[in-house]
Image 1 (tube, rainbow, N blue to C red):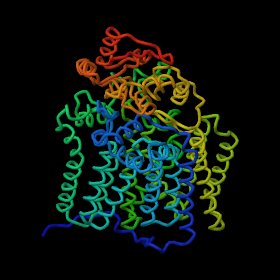
Image 2 (cartoon, one colour; image 1 turned 30 degrees about the vertical axis):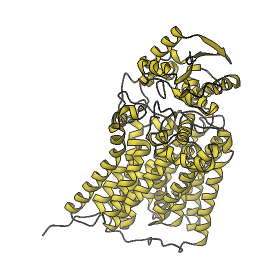
Image 3 (cartoon, helix red, strand yellow; image 1 turned 120 degrees about the vertical axis):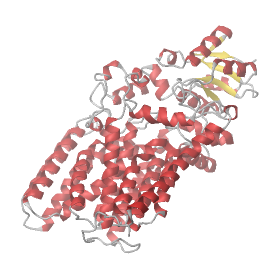
Image 4 (tube, rainbow, N blue to C red; image 1 turned 60 degrees about the vertical axis):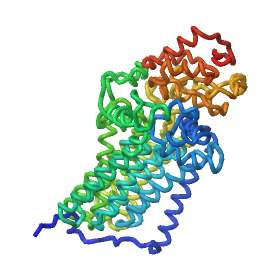
Length: 632
């Protein structure tokens, strides 16, 4: 007879029954509603000031509205010269909204806000399934008010959809472990395949958590669990590779070039530009050449403290230390069998997801963007929700009181450091919250004469920590973001920070960086000039880089070819292709961007095209910009 596997979490009695619909206290329902309403208001407040947000993606949505091929492949232009450098699922969601409500800021960004609210509700459901209402509410509130969550709920990057799919996959995976059934596990695999179609390998950061939860807790034989996991893996691989293979098997002359790749391959984009190139440290990383010398005081900022530094701390650093401490406490509890089986499943899933994401973001290569930290917000919130339950239900032993008090003191000190990052944060408020946290820790260090005093101290400590990210999120809302690298919070004090660099970019300095990160918008005269181009041209103009081409396209409402893709580094189109298109009268104008030509790493094809055009055609200056007429 085949032996059955041993599962964790069987020793602990279920202290919190699994919640059932309609049986939550009235106060809890109202609190959840309050969190969701407050979050919704913050996600849409003054949303119109955001404009096109990331014009690169807004332009791709515009293209999809004009042409089914552009919609299917995620083309940057509806002449279908090149795709954006991500799979198209998030563009499809925004595109459907724009088709219903027209192409505007609200139609692009309201789906992002709605998906983030969905993620908030999922976090509440995950925790409430086996923990008290206060733990679930705190987890949902922490996620909803994390600065990077608020920022991207108001932005058209693909992250909100990816996070919703990751949370949905975790929910299904944990139900598979709890019920010992394969069906929910297969559903989790399908959801992660959709996550892959959103942002490729980043969606798999939750995969180890789902796998371990199922392997450790499903009440089946090891052989049966291994077979189910293998079948789910095959489904995940097949579902994830379906789109890249479909693209690569489509004849190159029947689809746009795959943006971000060097060989016009979606598989290569997945493994290279959006895969290993993001994770491994490379001395020849081309992105390093784009960073000002004064910001490259070290070869890399990778390490345990990366997410707490001046560049990324405002996004995710406020509650990072207490979340990491919570992971240790949760692991200890699981190892001692203190949780019910459903509680242990969630605990393991949350900690593994948190650890996987934290270590990946901390030690990945230099191709790191601040908004990557959004992937950490959900597991961080889950771990803090479980930590609240630990603190409020711990007995009064001296060792536990010392551990809780020390954790609160350390967390408050780190939070105070976050308050000092920017002049946007009142120093007196940060100091007051530090004092409040220290008083709460002191109260928790000694046996309380009454239980209500201890609970009040716990909530006072929590409030001293959560005010920071909430204040940062409010600051984020009051500073509209645009371009490819939005930032949370206020302008940092450090002159050599990413925040200061981006502030200079918004003011046009340096000019090449402004064109790359935000894009140059055509002046009224130039926009009118391009609109009057012959309708026989497939592309009204060609220009570079991708953000600039997108802003031109959104302004003139005609296809604009982004030479070299997003950063003008892709080998598309080739000089020969471009010459044949010009000869056929398909490209009306080339708009010169001289500052971009000074950037290291430009595609040789972009350079060759510019040299050929300048040698072969006459230019005229419109709105201070040199424009070459290519079509008669």
